[in-house]
Amino acid sequence: MVDSIRSVANVGETDAYRASPQFAVSLRKLAVMSLCTFGLYELYWCYKQWDTLRRREGEILSPFWRAFFAPLWGFSLFPRIQELTAKHGVPATWPAGGLALAFLLLTAAWRLPDPWSLISFGSFLPLLLVQRSLNALNAAVVPTAERNDRYSGWNVVIIVIGAILLVFAVWAAVSPNSGDVRTTRDVAA
Image (cartoon, rainbow, N blue to C red; front, side, top):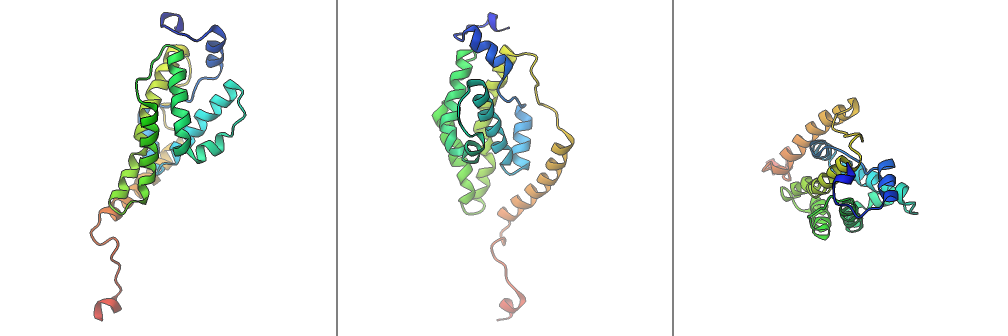
């Protein structure tokens, strides 16, 4: 229970958090869905985090656009989550600015030449540290909240299709002749 941990949040803030906890997802599901959706799940994750903050704190902001530009808005989201967890007695010891920068750079890595572009598949890694803190926060403040660690039927379909596409994408990126497409006429000349 929250009373058993050191907390600087007042009762109203704790009650508000219990009514609208941050988006919870298991670290494994976050990683698998991020990989198999080629990073689209990361945008969904950011949308859910911003939407919850907006509803709980009554802010006027657009979760859609903040998710759309997630690598840039990470510089605002990550410190807010770090502050939120610390306020409720669950300190997040990760560097918010450093994780935001890592998220931005890893997301932008798709622009690198193959096979270096594969680095972008690791863009979910900074989110794992943030989500670990959120899962600890939810466990401490709202232990009855949904854990979101199961895969729905749609999740499984996306994982299967995404995994197949992921294998092909990796194979194409590391294949020695992936950028060398010749026709029979080119070879004859």
